[in-house]
Image (cartoon, rainbow, N blue to C red; front, side, top):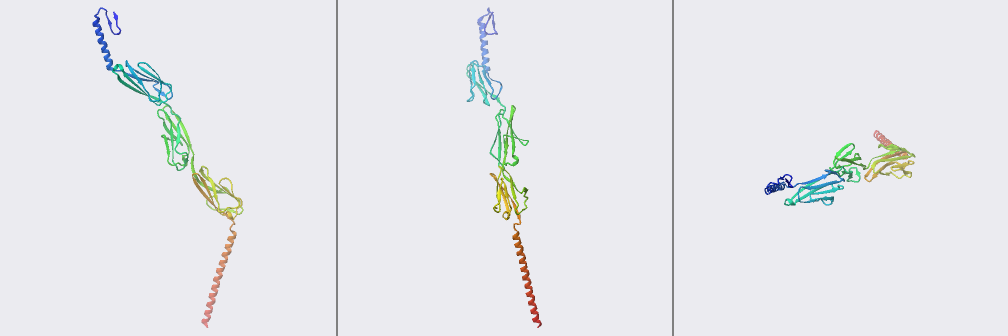
Length: 347
């Protein structure tokens, strides 16, 4: 027996070789027709199937076409290390630096009437979130003004963003505060999370606001609105205090500039010896870059008007005496005139 190259056919030597060969030719033709009808295949394989950002990756494109013209072209800027053969191309990436890696494999099968077949595969590039970045639209947190915080981080899948403030949780990349209040001060924590990990970043908010609740104390006693009485010759220390950020500067406005007035530490006005010059309203004005607030105190110096009061009393008594004397004289004259008239009538 003679064995031909096709594994399925054994041809006896005594047979009519022409007839046998005729049969073999028809069988082979039938085989190739079936192959052409089925077409050819294109495969794209990646190793690993999904890759972490920065790791290595191997991509292979292969085909069943007997005589292919193969093309694998990436978007500009991607240059792998390539090896290839007649029916396959292998690209190696030492470090994946693209989030959207698409492998396009194009085959023109020259042995199949130049038929074109294209396949694409999107490679899953994943990564835990990178460091979260917190930004704000306004440099300062100013009472009454708006402020917006934003938090961003790279990652694949895209990270979910949440905020934590005073044990409350808010979701979204942006946190908008339409009118900043003092209660909005404190720490804001941004958390970015995907299925591969999470990162946090924080920001501390310090509220800037104009002076408010300005108060005055006299000799370490807070003024409640009533006049403050001091004795002549007393030492008087007035202290002005306020709330504000940045810290306020203080300015005193006195009823007169006494020769023994002293300004000490910020907000302090000292009178070493009270005199009549120090009687009146004292105003403290607190100012910073965001506004002004003020308060006042009424200082009364005892004994500073004694002479005037005595003069007034004397004048008052004199006036009363004069008026009384005038009335008395008028009455005396009136009654005298009446008597004279009465005597004349009797005569």
